Length: 622
Image (cartoon, rainbow, N blue to C red; front, side):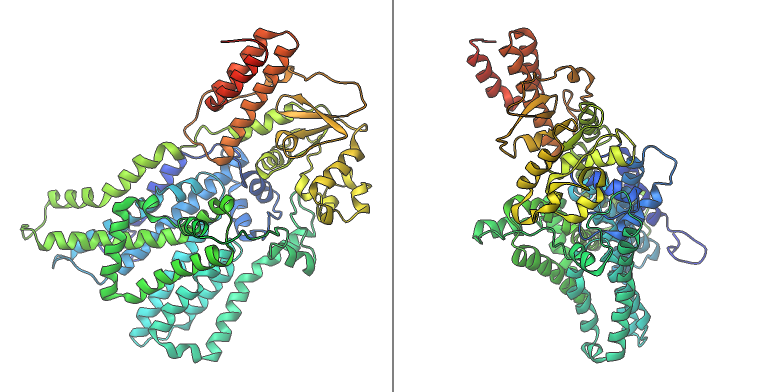
């Protein structure tokens, strides 16, 4: 076998497999369209080259935009494919780092076998990382963390190359400048990249602590970091063009800082206690990602590295420590938001995979040295090595495939489509909650569905920049007469409804219906949305005709993938069927009502008790 990656005239097939195998898995399980959480927003911002939620994610949006030009499937599918590709690049980063750390290690005097073993260990580590629950979940729809993980792996690789050159007497400060440039650039993916600064600094200081006294190099490194950070100029430049999605409208320095510093998300930290602290720390969960076997390999790999490259071990622990110190200690994440912080650890899981790969190599070395093998290894030995190395990634793939298979996940797409189908011409519908709003933004803004409808997002109507973005609805609104931020979105919603009701059909979504108590208005059900009428107006009957036009893929027939927001959408359908069924029974259409009640229970078995209560209320049994 030839030594071939970045060699002279050759390509490394192991490196190619480190990209191709994960990408093939991701494409087989890729979400076909918009999903819940931030998906619809990222899709809309990328397609229009606008601005996403704070801090804007400019590099991520530009990266996604490239894939919108691929003539394959919908815009949502193309952008989902972009994340699958960035995750595959992150797996390549695992391979490159693993093989680099093993380049000086040998198992036998057979250079061919040593080369095979190091590359096979790197590929196994890459494949194991590719099918961990966290990365796999992020790979099936638009997420910035895989691309961030890839860039952090490149920075680590460059620093290791710089370290080895420095030990040989080669200065190569350009390597450090490249790292600081990439770190500044990565800030436009996600700000958690700064949590790696202590780890990267330690790799430099442990090579020679006197390097921190070199003022000229420090200034140049800072300048290159600012050069990378300058990609954030995208935000004000694009804001001046008024793109379709222009979150925060960062046209000036005040709005840019408001956007970049996340000032639109004020929150009161919860009271500290041991149970909360433990839950915050458990967000970084190696056994969950790699199993307890992977955890054991991590420990073994750290021991092996400590003997030869202890600076890598120190940098790894520094990364883990500072991530937990800031995320768990400083931010003091509340219980209901810990699931968000779990995504931040993706780059740390990448480094974990690298150390697991190192452990596999040294475990093989131990086995070979204690086994009586022939002088020249045959196919049987190579086969045993492959079986040993790839048992972990194969096991992880088998464990996690079902839960991460999103190839038939149309729930968010259908939820948004069904919502829009429920609305009459020129309607206004107020939404509450990102997952209820963002798929609607994508369908209307990118796929051009129901452009006659206005879809104001209630939590945003307290901001002037948002009111300015919807002039047809808010140019003369009474919201502009008050300091709505002081009163809050609930008051803002009541004012906004009073502005528009009677002039245009006015609706709210399910989340709004059950988030706010309306004194002056009565919500009237129409499928999964509600028409608003004044209390003094004549009563209106729920419109049940829309149910026949709904698409219920993944609702009545379950799909394998089910995250928190998808589960909430399913419950919304179940509760809406329950409400419609009870109404039908109340007006004497008992059989139709019972059918709706049973559909509610079919969608969500946990609705059984509620169905029984409705039946008992009307003197009915099954």
